[in-house]
Amino acid sequence: MEHGEALMLIQNATIITLEPENRILEDQAILIEDGRIASVGPQKAVSAWYEDVHRVDARGRLVLPGNICAHTHFYGAFARGMAIPGPAPKDFPEILERLWWPLDKALDPESIRLSAQVMLVDAIRNGTTTLIDHHASPNAIPGSLDLIAEVVEAAGLRAVLCYEVTDRDGEAKARAGIEENLRALEKYGRPSDGGRVAATFGLHASLTLSEATLGACRDAAPEGTGFHIHVAEHEADEYDSLNRTGARVVDRLDGHGLLGPETIVAHGVHLDAAEIAILAETRTWLSHQPRSNMNNGVGTAPVDSMLRAGVRVCLGTDGFPHSMWEEARFAYMLQKLAHRDPRRMPGDQVYRMLTRNNAALAGRFFPGAPLGVIAEGAHADLIFVDYHPHTPLSTGNLPWQMVFGFHERMVTTTICGGNLLMHERELLTLDEAAIAAAAREAAPAVWERYGQLVT
Ligand SMILES: [Zn+2]
Image (cartoon, rainbow, N blue to C red; front, side, top):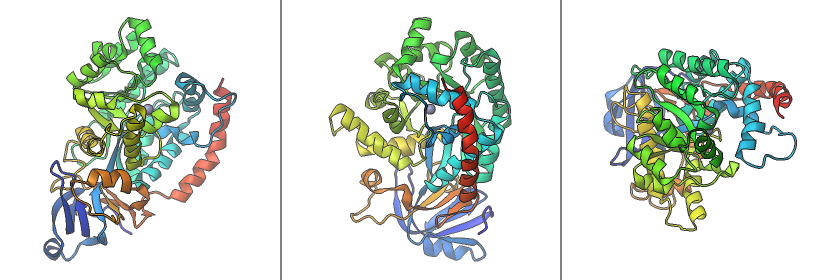
């Protein structure tokens, strides 16, 4: 199967446009030209205009914009099935110290590349076409974002990359992290010309960043650059900030000029009301990862309060499989259980986070065309979904059909930037079996290095 041709006609599609005024249209055709949607219209009309064009038959399936993940970590792939020696970590700080920090130190260029490949196979299969990644590899910092960018390019997906600056491994590595972000910002920036790799400036979390390093990051970042940082994932982050500076985490970051409409803060589980107000005032994006929060036992983010205060809340996976409808389902369920109130997090609210908010966030990094909608001129990032609803599917009930009915196993075809990445469940750009085999072969050495570093 060819991919990457300039012209492609998708036919027999039932389109869910995900425009602000969403529409569901049957018997449609979509013409893709040079990575963008050139026209959308009734099958009979559009199909007749073009004779000599690569036709992709959607066979009546739903065709939607590809899903978007607002926060993930490709580098975590080798954690799957890995044993943590000794007693199980009792809280999130121990999970950081005994799982993630020794694991990211165990990564070398080859395992960084394999981790990204494994995660991108998963993203294509799950119909997620744009991913905002947060990378760490303290023993292989320079060039690490290029390694990931090469994998993203080869996979054909769209990604926003950054390196997490931290003081936990000393001044030289903090400096190297800053340099890696600056290099990537210079090289990738915000492509307006069809490029699929963008960059932002990564910071680990307030609790591993000194006043001097936060200031150095702000000074080094070019004007208009945003930051991507974990915030108040566990209360330890708040206590550290209060001890260090007397200010809570969001106040501290705001004091350094790190918030704003280009910045993404991940989690926000332990924010207070004033911090939520600052995020709303500064138009800072917040990414919610309910599966990760549940797995780490860190608590329930006050997402309802954030939304009511006007914070732009998005959805990410934090390195869990890039199955965004599943993440949305957990977001929907978690608030109800945690507050013992089934009115919390209604379906249309989680749907807006997943579709409108994630698209608006990702769109800032790819300003050349709209993202996350099926409309003329938009980026041609599309998925086919083999969903046969047994009740009427309408624009009104779509959020609940999505929460209860959509599953990633129904994704049959994934297209990004007008290129076919998966067709009828066959991956076209990445060799899934070969990647898994190479990763399995590399895993024992990664685990061995991890074992020597873990305390
Ligand atoms: Zn994270």
